[in-house]
Image (cartoon, rainbow, N blue to C red; front, side):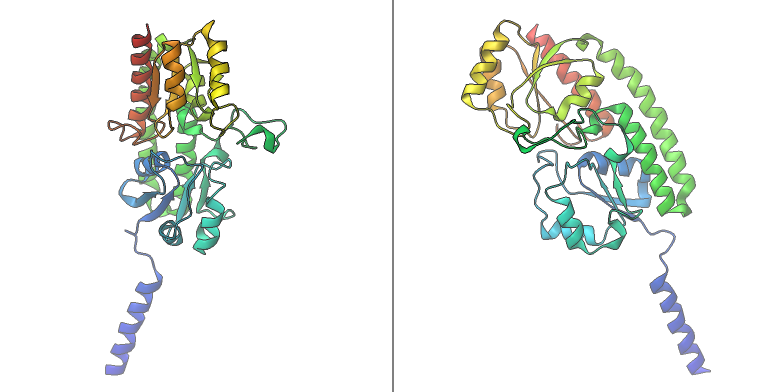
Length: 306
């Protein structure tokens, strides 16, 4: 009898060891703050999310540190941009993690850029063109319509990974969608004075938002994508733009703006530094506030310039 009881206890512990409790959270490794924020909006308490980068870092240039590899090793789902944005560090991180759940052919591998159509897809590509992405512009999170498509696709992935909480994920996405669509109407009204205004950019990382707001990009401070401007390039830009001044010069929060401010000072136009992602401004702690604050900053710049 005593031996039978010991066997039953051992069997119980064995069962617990190999069965995930229904309350277990999905562990999400998000490459960027925007996907960390979206994961938490949809998944709520049924997942725990971690962002590998901050709003003050260039997501192109991250080191696959041991701490990140350790996080990836325990993840159930990796949620990144894709489209070569993380090509300098994500492949190494995936290999070093040894985590079969988050490899490219598994359900735990989710790339946002795979869910939507991209702009600026090059017809040809070579090294002389600078930091060109073969799959197109990867900075897709700054188009609110594409972001909604990504949110729905991410919800479907959660359903596949965690069917036990299907109802929660579906209801969460539906609420997100309704709130997002109401916010879109508000943002469109707010942004109407921006339509058709001319802007100079530093890099094409803001182009999805500028396209959505119908702002006209007239020049780029970088001579080629990812290449810092030289003094000669800035002088040439100044000559070109003096006769057709832009309304704004726009940069992202994580970018060095020395060249932008040099140009702005000589053209007498404002520089607007946009958050780019969640956390890029002290007031931006959600995806909704990312868009609202960006529009506010653009309007403030326009009013200041006017």
